[in-house]
Image 1 (cartoon, rainbow, N blue to C red):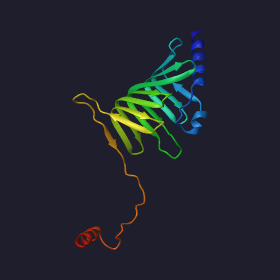
Image 2 (image 1 turned 120 degrees about the horizontal axis):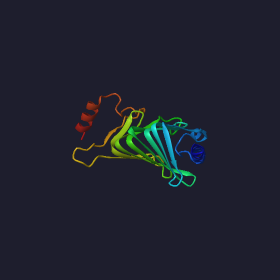
Image 3 (image 1 turned 180 degrees about the horizontal axis):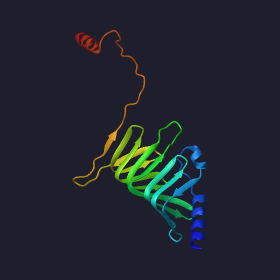
Image 4 (image 1 turned 90 degrees about the vertical axis):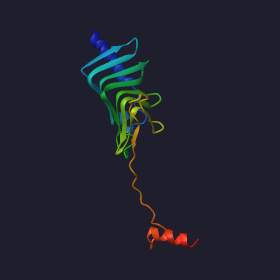
Length: 190
């Protein structure tokens, strides 16, 4: 009887879950899948806790961790909290974009504000670009990443790796002269 009630509650929660707004358009039409070693649902608090090698997926979005907690208000899931060493979030935001990956000891995703807060060895990467620090706030609505260092004396500092964008550059104005000759000629004419 308890298992039947838990199953009904989990099904109702999954049906009512609003997909991520910054996902591929087809993600919203995909089924939500959650696998774990165990699940505990508390109807009074609106919290479902999945434990043991947890994988939550919907279309291109995947969240993995040692545990994942879903917080629900009424029939709407408001927060996803994944914990692990590391926990991982990944999603393709557009068909022409590379998959965005986020890693950390704790991933706290606020569905309403579309903000993912990553703490403990935090890292966000897309392609060859990456941001890392002790804490990162990734705002999916604004496509911004704010990285913070650990304020303790031996704390982790913020690191960013941003690859140059490949674009065709216009040829220099003095095509027939090397740069050094063009520069020295201009200086001599003054």
